[in-house]
Length: 327
Image 1: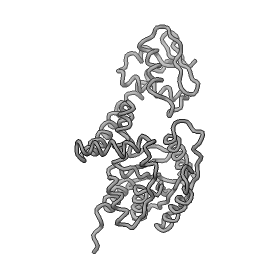
Image 2: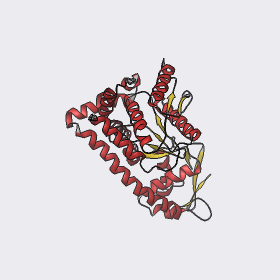
Image 3: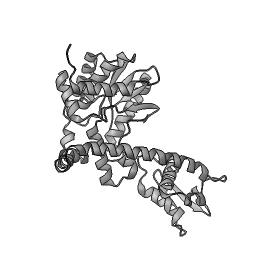
Image 4: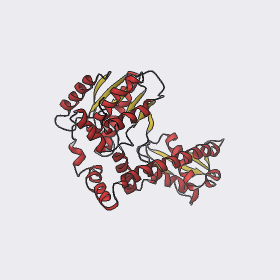
């Protein structure tokens, strides 16, 4: 009996864990760019899902940002057919004109496309190929931005995507393992030139910062960064639960939030309450930053009769007596 190569086995086990007990009867859709991580994920899902009584399909998104992107997307579709994945869909998106830098704009367009595809096919979940290395990069970038606990929590293994679970089964798998799995399985991954383009901050972290950390501190630093993300995520979940309860308590019967109730909260909880309330008012989450929450906080803790706090989306919040109100 042939021995299964360890990288292939590890990825299949990770996928099985993610899919076991998943509710709903719809297919799971693998988001596949053609890179090593998503190819290895697609191959593992094609093997595991039918053995769990689950259909598996694939979605590839063509951002149209590079020459030959349409041809590469078509190759991914053909690869999916060879694996027996169905449904399979190629989605073309428009990145230009979106807010933020090119990385953020492409990511926003991609997730919108994945969410829409999941809705069209009644998917039970969407799977992405983010690895432990991606998680370590995310934590370092968040640390450099001063993003706070939410950023340091990195990417969750599961989150909501337009009402469908988005799963990241490979957060405990290394990039080296996905590359090795592709070699064993005879898969030929596409190497995205953006991944080594120094114009992109993540590419610089990948090519320069992480290797320097590994040389200085040893390979365990990657596990340490990923583990930190998991620990911070647990703390965030607890604080979010406290904030949800505190927001309900702080609501004033006459509208808005009661300043005395906000002032009595611990700063970490109050900032989450104000952040959640700002989103509730209609502030776009992607544009809502620390400085916006700090301006709201100043209306509570440093009130000197100042004017309203300005939030994304053209919203203004003012303090009137002991209440915060939407202007």
